[in-house]
Image 1 (cartoon, rainbow, N blue to C red):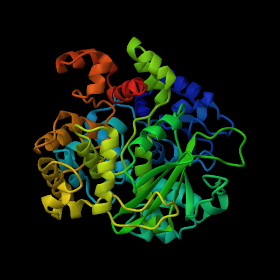
Image 2 (cartoon, one colour):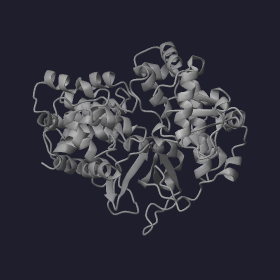
Image 3 (spheres, rainbow, N blue to C red):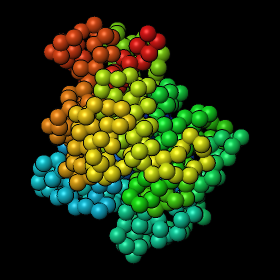
Image 4 (cartoon, rainbow, N blue to C red):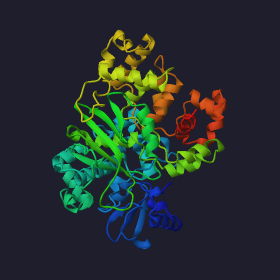
Length: 505
């Protein structure tokens, strides 16, 4: 759904938006925000407070737009929990990709010009594209995202205000306090007195997990947790990832900080109605990078997607209708780390999923540091990109792969370690594709698979995939492209559904 700038909204637009918000439909959560003139706050469509009068409402497509207009976030529905809008056809490609990178913290330690160079454009062009589509600047987007991250940390953790400020991406506590007070008309500590949702349950009642806190990550229903978890579990790197009793577990390293996380559906003893959210717990050692962990988990579990719209679009094709109905709400399984996913894709060339899993486990034992966790399944951190880049070929081939494939792994590891190859959600898939296929041993299938899962590109389609060829009963790329044109802009989701349709064969 596209929300035009306030000055471009007609009375009919506003009435339509008002009806949407009045319906409290969770499918629109994160797609639209309502500013309430009488209270000075802005809310999500799922807010439980009484609907304000139509004359008091203004509507925005992004939280930053509401905050720029002077509204502060509602303390009841907590806009920082909104799942985000993953639409692909309502904004220009550059603006949308830049938005994703900014929301994930790309401007916390870099300038707009630095980010623009990643997209091979100038900073002025990026500023113009973002402002044209969203009516706000990249810096304003980044400021709003930092404030919303800080608000969640203040609400759900016991971190000090100083730690919250720096963890959320602010350069100084003074700047954080000033911006927080001017935007929200509150001092940061006031949120702890006003919070209405501090007591989150352990992920399992029978086995409470240690850790600093639980974080809540909202999504739009439907959400096929069981199928997504099974997909991730079948491809889990032994020692690094595991699925246990309906909980996703993994080890994590971000910079010098290492630890573990656990993710499961959210539960709360305070509410009788179901909560459309996941629950994330992490070890105390990850406190300084908890915002980065949050954004990565949102990618892995694709919490930004509007599954209802995606399923409705794909169900128009008779080939997909049955499998979409059977696995409704399936998400695009993301990647916690770009190099880890690329490594897994290379290891999976010409071998089975099980065979690639075995090789990935050997790589983790050889190139990942050991770590102590509450679970015997988690023993190592993910293979270290720098260590692989420095290794000799014999050390890589000894895990059981040809020399040429080992050389490919070492080359991409060196490129990523040097910052010459960026594989993150929001990275331009065309730029990444050209960079990937320039490496010997990487073809279209690997590049497309990386675009699907590491870049979270919803329209990626691995043309050479044997499963897709079998499901479509086509072999030529030109025929596959023509057959799948109607699936745009959700071809990556269609590919997942096709693989699921073959899972029983």
